[in-house]
Length: 301
Image (cartoon, rainbow, N blue to C red; front, side, top):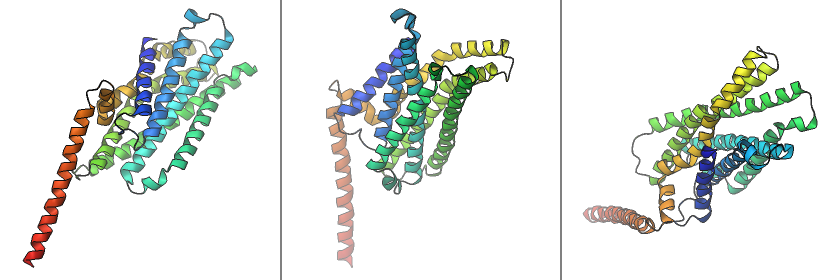
């Protein structure tokens, strides 16, 4: 419970930072996707907190269990889907920096937002189909299929991020473009996020999927199913680290996010302005230097 409580707090900080944005530097690039990812993570953390602590809040309440379990499945599904879409955006920005500006317009982003949340709602709802008193085998097949969808999403992330890694290595030379360097920094962050996701949540879902398959009779239904259920239960705290790791990586990898966090305590605004002034002065110096060179060349001719 302490892990998900920490994750909820950290993701709440991400949401507040992007909503207020005191330095006006966060709302650029795939910031809407990162905001939605933080919302999905905080839903997962809060739902799992109340789900795992049911004995401390409301005991023996089926409605309480159904709501919290749906929230956990809905939030975790949305987190997987948003991280997949973030990988798609970063791949497009890294591979096609000019064309991607026309691909991810405001209208298209809004449509994707609606589609992702609706699909995540369906995935979360599929996990509580037992309320309709369906046969157990039908429920197990639906739950197994849901985990399969999330695993496919993770495979897509891995493939895209491998392509991003190759693109970063291929164009590793300095281009002198700050925006290009910022996109590469975000791309590296997404690769780390996917690696964390693969090491935390993916084994948990894999164990749950094997447990469902064992209960369907594909393995030894008694002993094997019990062992897999026990392993998935033991791995739950590690899986929860995924939802707390995202905002920590933002703070470690994204300078703009760090500057925004420091701005809330009044320690960064002056330094940010000073750095911006220095960058502007450097650009003006380069411009006037180039202009003077052209004038000297013209007078020489």
